[in-house]
Image (tube, rainbow, N blue to C red):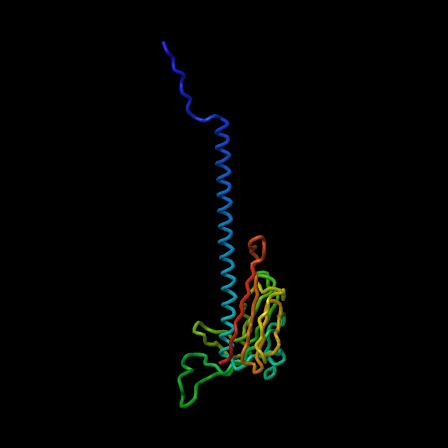
Amino acid sequence: MNFKEPIKNGFSIIELIIAGAISITAIGVGFSLLQIALKGNKIDETQMGLNGRINDTLDFILDEVKASKRIIENESEITQFNQNCIFPNNSEFLFGISLPDQALVRSDYAPEGDRFSLNQVECPIVYSLRPSLSTEKSPYALIRYGPQYNDLGYYISPSYAQFQETILLDGITSSTEYEKINCPNGWDSLNTIKGISFCIDEFKKAIEIQIEAWDPQQGINNNQLRSIASIGGFSS
């Protein structure tokens, strides 16, 4: 009688160990790649958010410049016509904006004979830089001190008593070692205060302004996430 040796199917212990090690390695590599991709997406999202915040701030400032009579470059001019015109004393003066008479509501634009019902804004708007608070991104915050405005863009009151501080952008850098804008010929010299640089034309009607800010999230190779942008415009 002939007996057949049974066929052995399956894996040896060594083969199972090797296969398990390969599987674990593949899973680990895949997980690492996924982490890198997620971190990269988060960094990109943070960078775009920082870029957007800086550009929104610059657009806001430019809108007020366009609506102004002139730009104030010297701090002493803030109180030139009204000693009640102030700004937060814990901040460093950048520049001011003198506004023309304003319509506070839409009906002020309805002509009465050949005149409009406009209100004199008692004090200039002041832009300044102060150390960030604990709830803000350090090291500095750009603030605006002036009349508040409603959703339609109308200033609520021209009275200095109702002026308020508004935080426009936090995370302004303390370093001045960034590539600066070039001021047009004939303009005043460039002013650099921390992460903000600007120059104003000789007639105090136009401004070029640049802002550098950062985010505490670390980028690739643990580099700081920084963004810098500039804009220019003039009073209309």
